[in-house]
Every structure is written in structure tokens, then in C-alpha cells.
Image 1 (cartoon, rainbow, N blue to C red):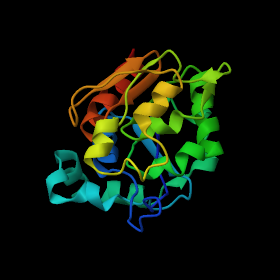
Image 2: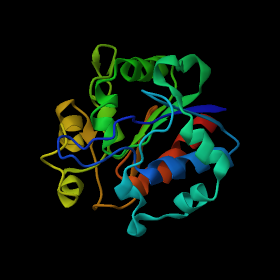
Image 3: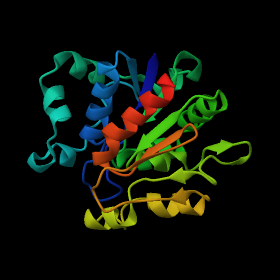
Image 4: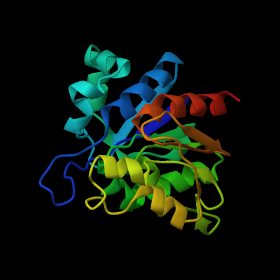
Length: 225
């Protein structure tokens, strides 16, 4: 079984002058869920090479078991440091695609024509698409049979109240919750920062960093079925 993980290459938080990137837990937790199940994992990003880690995601209060494991795992660090180029990835070569969040994807992957085409190729081929936290935002320009891919689907993602809590409501290009609703998605959520992920057909979404492992486990279950 082969899963493609797509990471952001974007490292600037709007015009705040502050750094951003992907959220470390949202890569590390799914990566080990997949690897421990014997899945072959390939990482890509728009620019290739080392994708930017959001420094906030690595603060002392945000440490998790998966992150600790990653820091003791030179092989995984090397894989992350040498991501392939998103433009070279083909849905034909994998069974599913997984998008970790963090704020970075809101600027690059949302508008990336390669990313949009890739998600559509997976979905059209009957393969699952999974996205966590801010990454469901990358679905905003993705269509299926002429309609937004999320239309009529049960979905979740980083909520308006979670964005308010991190004080970035006015910095992000759009709010994930509002955008998924605007596109006709049936947006669901639980309390801020709680683990919540949804499967609707072959679309899997997770609300926040705490939801990354459960979203990955649900993707595996879907593939194994």
C-alpha cells in the first residue's frame, strides 16, 4: 500500500513578517500511523526539499509522542528533508493522498494547480483524499463532476473559534469553516482542540492537530476495506 503526503512550501504568515509552515504533529502522527501499518509513504511539496515547520507547532506545550519519536528518528528526518516535487507526483502511483495542515497550505497549496489536479485525479480514480486542520482549505478550488468536491459532504476542519483563539482570523486568506460551508459542505465540529475526524465516502477531514492520528487511522481503515 502506498500513500502520498503533500506538505506546504510556504513559510510566511501573510504579511505579518512571522514564520509559518506545516504543523509538525499533523505530519508526524499520520506518518507513524502509516509506517507502523507497513505503508510505503512518499512526501512531496511544491518546491521539494525541506518543507518549513511552523515553529509554533514545536513549542514545549505542543509536544506529542509522535513528535518526540520523529526527533529520535534520523531516517524520518532525512525523508522530510528531501521531499519530492509536487509537480512530479501522479495519483496513478498511490492508493491515497493525505494533506497535513498548519497555516502554510492556506497560501500555496490552496491555489496550486498541481495540487488541485492531483486531488481531482485521486478522487476521480476512486481513491481516498484526506486533509487535516487547515488542509481542508486546499479543497476550496477542487471540483468533482463540475461541483465543489465538498458540496453535500460531511466535512470538518480548523474552526472559526480555533482561528480566533490563535488570533489569526484577520491574517489568513479565508476561514476554513466559512469556506467549506460556502462551497456547500455540511460542516461539523466539536469543542475547540478536541479530536474529531469525519469520513464521507472517500473524503476524510480532521478538525485540528489533535485529529491527525484519527484521520490517518480512518484513511487506513478505508484502504483496508
